Length: 519
Image (cartoon, rainbow, N blue to C red):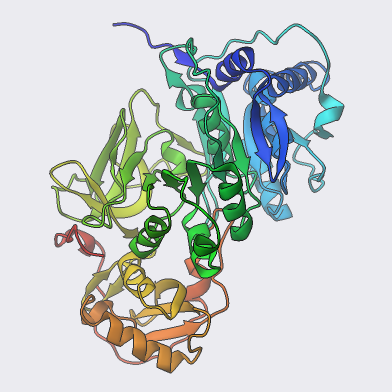
């Protein structure tokens, strides 16, 4: 059997820098801030400093702490720490002090490299130093050789359903198989435009994606600034756009899709959350040449992923497994379910050892053997291998009429012109409830809005799926990934107690097939 070789992120940066040293890697909110050659040199300088002054040894956990639009220093530090053999712990600057302390102790963090914004003081790490203070000039490259199973980084889940969990990712999971890239395109690729917060899984993935691809220019828009996103797409005539579903909501709400020329776009890539079909259709209407591509994964399953192109005939599909990815659907006891039955979604990648959840219970029940990673989601497959997302397991609403997909209900409500944004949750009384951000000029009276939505949904939703209450809000609570934090919404619904039929019990998500063509 031939041993697989890998092209690690550090190898890819060196190759890109050798072939295209003067090509812009990162274009940050209107400024060409980092060339490939400069990126390689600066990361080498940090690696030398970490190994010398920092005393870093292979496998040490090093936190990197950067915020605002400090992408050049973030990317430099990420690759410099990897070149020194450290495992990078990505830290968002908005992380509460107590969470930073917890992550530092949990991961065994040795030190923190930071930029303009210093981290909170913590006794959990031995040192915290500025990138420039640690960097050491020199000509000789750091010659550390990675092993496939060396720890590369620690990423944390989004924390929408509770405390974020840390996952250790080895180098082979960030690499491309087949060895160092020997042939790179020499034409100037069309820039990609993205809007991502720093210090989270998405920012790490963005850097990895740039290095795993033909060297291109990544144009970074300020997170949450839909208008700036539109302006940068038009200015650069970008062909590829990367956005969260929440940014799609903002671009629609603020009229960005109509205000800018987005006709150059051929690919809209979305991740981090489910893109509701009405949002996908709105993007396609504004970008006539584009395809909407979605990636479905989980932090703990990296690099396992399913990839799909939005198809109006299969709106709840999240695509098929990428090469080397496997999907398993089980009941709550870990037994595999046949196609068409909704159950727990598990992912696994070829050649990947079981991910290590730092605070996981090793005796947890219902875990199938074979290194499968629990996504925390429910869904089903069809006979063609297509994966359909039903809901986050903790967000599905157990009603007396059966299990309800909050995603499906939201997709129907999004189609109403009075709805600019919406999140559906279950109440303590097992009733479907909706938090709605009204569109500009729409009624803000909850009773009138509820009546309109119920009338709108009567032909698309079953009675037990239809919202029984509406709360009007200015914005939905979201985390740095743009994901709605539904546990905060649930706490805001204080429906009066009333007699109700018993809620569906555990395991009922395996009781019936789910229609693949439902909106």
